[in-house]
Amino acid sequence: MKKFFILLSFIMGVVVLTSNYLVQFPINYYGLEEILTYGAFSYPVAFLITDLGNRSYGKVVARKIVYVGFIIGIVFTLFFSTNFADLISVRIAIGSGIAFMVAQLLDVQIFDYLRKKKWFIAPLTSSLIGSTVDTFLFFSISFYATGIPWVTLSLGDLAVKIFVALAMLIPFRLLLGTFKASKA
Image (cartoon, rainbow, N blue to C red; front, side, top):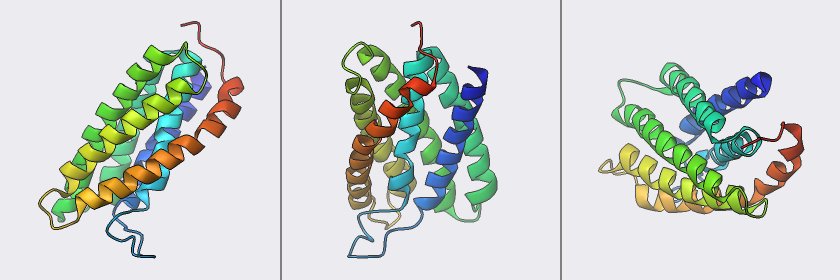
């Protein structure tokens, strides 16, 4: 279990760092620059990681994965992708931290509550609710009153996150047997 805990925590941190970096870049094709960033494609993997930890080891371990992933992700973000001279970059780091903790811990609780339902109900429901909370917290904290079209960007990112959450059901189902089943 310890090996998978460390692996999931590290991957969580890398996902946070990658997403915090990629959210700074709008997709400049097909008129999507005001409705979508590249971060929308990487961040939903965080919910997959939390849900795998929750299903396999229970909510206590899933919370620990969130905490360790948060620390790794924020340290990496502050060290590698935060420009302290740029207020938006600092706001991205703050918004990311707040949104991540709230959304991931909410995901853990919802997943745990629904864990006895059909295999796909808990990960899908918790990821959709968590993604929605995360998206609006992150974009409002990071970009409110900056001139960046944060409402349309958040809606575009949320649409992609919902699509990716659906797609993440495939690896979730495939990886379920990889981890030891929880007794909880």
